Amino acid sequence: MFIMKVGLGCVDVITDKVSSGSGWVLVAGLIAVFGHLSYQLWFGASGFRELRGLSLEVRQKESENLRLYERNQLLTAEIIELKSGMDAIEERARNELGMIEQGETFVWIVPE
Image 1 (tube, rainbow, N blue to C red):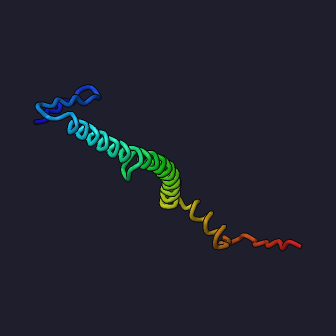
Image 2 (image 1 turned 60 degrees about the vertical axis):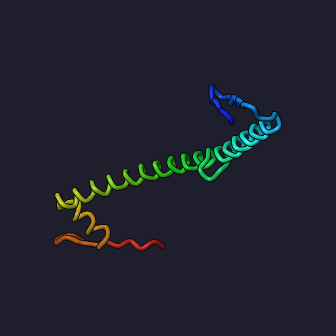
Image 3 (image 1 turned 180 degrees about the vertical axis):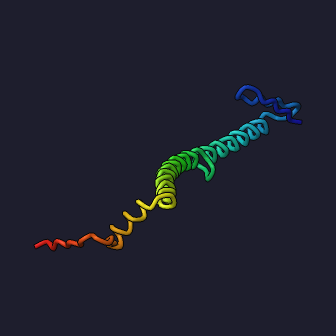
């Protein structure tokens, strides 16, 4: 019969009427299991290495989200301006569509 007591980082194996050879097998098995679990923790698919990679990816996405948020704020301000005032609409029409008001003279300077 084996009784295992786990305490502060060490495993005490108490054997009762078991030969010393099989006790070493148990200890070796526990060390192997611990080694495998440690490897999975540090290098496995969901270990610390992936955690660091995901943390970097989260920081990049947060930075991109901030940039997009600021762009959306500018676009929202432009939409409000276009909805509220005729000056912004007139400016766009002049620059993008070549609007000329009555009484104005259109002058086109051709570069040489």
